[in-house]
Amino acid sequence: MKPTKNLLALKIIYLGSAICWTLLIAFLCLGSFSNLPSLGIGGADKYIHITFHFGFTILWFLFFFEAKIDTRNPILKVFVSSILYGILIEIAQEFFTTTRKADLYDVLANTAGAIIAILLIHAFVAWQKRKYN
Image (cartoon, rainbow, N blue to C red; front, top):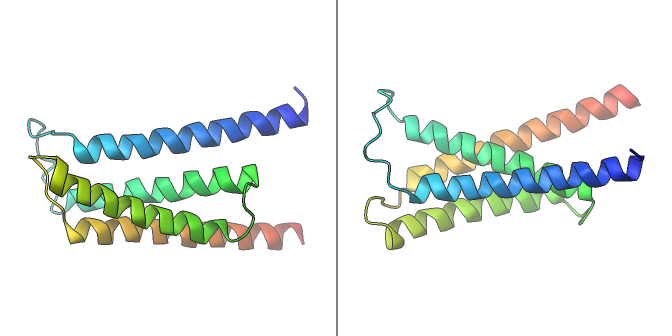
């Protein structure tokens, strides 16, 4: 396979992964799972929200970075998108479901996940620069 085909395949993988992750978040946050057993961990759903938005931020950043769609601060754009998506999900829970309610602490957990991802991205980029310079 030629390098350009490899890059195209990688872009498609990143895009597909980011879209699937985004849809998974919506499905799991808007669906009713009242029959599932409790994890027995206090605040476990907040850890799940952190994980959701950590993954969201990483996957969308990888896509925008690799696709070179917009080179002007993709980290900030993905971070803001993660926060807005989390807020929209909370609004949808409040107004479009009967089993879920909006929760400010979920928004804070979403933000924490995005911040952790941004810090990891910055650390990785700095490490790469030191490694290759």
